[in-house]
Length: 130
Image 1 (tube, rainbow, N blue to C red):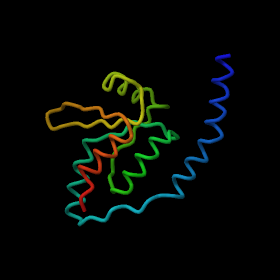
Image 2 (cartoon, one colour):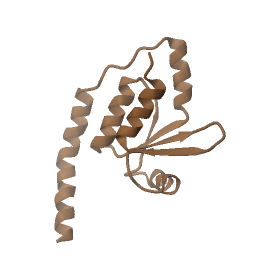
Image 3 (cartoon, rainbow, N blue to C red):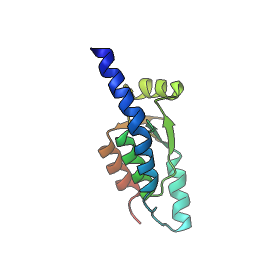
């Protein structure tokens, strides 16, 4: 029974994945416009952030849309197909669960923030001010 269920959900992902990606592209939000000097500071701060994600995960899409709204150039790391990123997520964060935002501070310590709602709240609190 287990192989049948896995095959069903794998087929469902194959069918729905492209539809979800198309919807994401069509419904791209307009990015926040900041003064160029402020945006350059935001860009520097975003170099300390990385989003571990699966391309067709609906929660990851939700986070990516918010990143676009806030005009945040955060690096996307594919934890589904890239084994190095998947291993880093497992060892650093403790679980292969996406979306996950890796936050590096100046001293080299990393914080791993799971859950799309928590990630969006963090991004809005840190970068949402126009």
